[in-house]
Structure formats: structure tokens, C-alpha cells
Image (cartoon, rainbow, N blue to C red; front, side):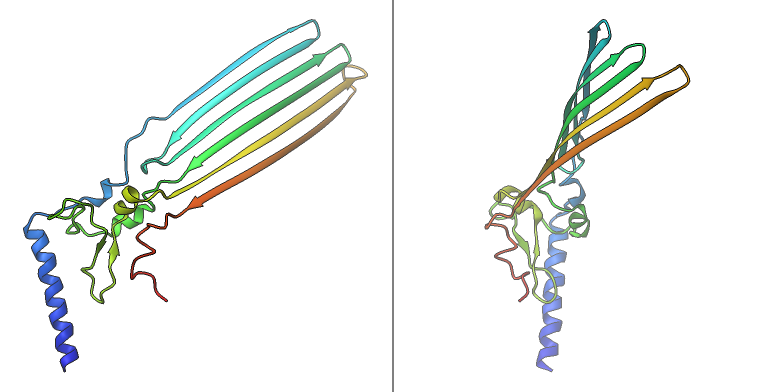
Length: 212
């Protein structure tokens, strides 16, 4: 009976705490916290020239793709060189390229986290003005973390990159206009690297959310 009364009292207390937040005008729009409007751009440059039977082409490109989640991005840059040799009977073409891609995930985490946060959770502590770390207004005593606290107070990051090298070779030899042999050869190599760091100050480590 005492246990039942304690649960009812606890729920009543939580109810009044939440109601008090609403009456004080707390109405946090969490969905706007991790999002931003970004400008993306792409650039490319190509140069071609040659003498007699040889043509040489150079190209370079760069694209910047910023995600709608704050501080998420993907940069793509590359360059290539093409050599084209042609005579009456022989055609040889070789293209070498290198491509570098760097990406970074948003330190704001998953958008679904913000979908589940309640509008009566205030972003800042009303008495200190500091960002709230956790919200304890959940039945059962398990607090819910404020993801913005980690963004401001930690140096978490999740990033990756890869470099890809490629070479494509093609050769045609014409015995006549209708009879010829063709050969192609290609090789590529991709080197990937990723790095993820969770700051020891992350609220996850010091939270009762960790269940043993």
C-alpha cells in the first residue's frame, strides 16, 4: 500500500513539474536545434591540347555538400589526366585519375533524438542560464539527456575519408576499316580511413542512463 502511494505521489509530482514548465511559457522547438539552411557548390575545370598525333587533357573538380544537420558535410575533390595517341592504324588512350572524399557527421547526433524531446524541456536552466544537461521528469527516475549539452561542452567527432586511384587503358588496332582488335585494361585502388571520438565529458558516461 505504501509503495502504491509513493508511485501515485511521484506521478503527481512529475505532472505538476511539467505543468509548471508549460505555465512558465517553456515551449522549446527542438526540431530547429540541429538543422540549418546551407549553400552547396560545385566547380570543374578542364584543359585540352596536343601536337600532331597526341592529345593531352587535364581536368580538376571540387564539390562541397553541406548537410541539413549542422556541421555535417561531404567534400569531394579530384583530378585526372588523359593521353590520346592516334595514327592511321593505332589508337591508344589512357586516363589516370585520383579522387578524395572527406565526410563529417553532425555532432548534433540523430535527428530522431530531437523528435522525441518534449517542448516543456527547457534548453537553458532558468536560474543559472546554463544549458541543461539532463531532464529527470520521467517516471522511473531515468533521466533524458539534452543533446545540445554535449555539442557545447564536448569535442565529439565522427569523420571519414577515402582516396581512390584509377587508371583506364584502351587500345585499338585497325587492320582495315572493318577489321580491328580492341584491348582494354583498368586498375583501381581505394584507401579508406575513419575516426570517431567520444569525449570523456560526454553526458552518457556520467548518466544513470547507463544500465549495468
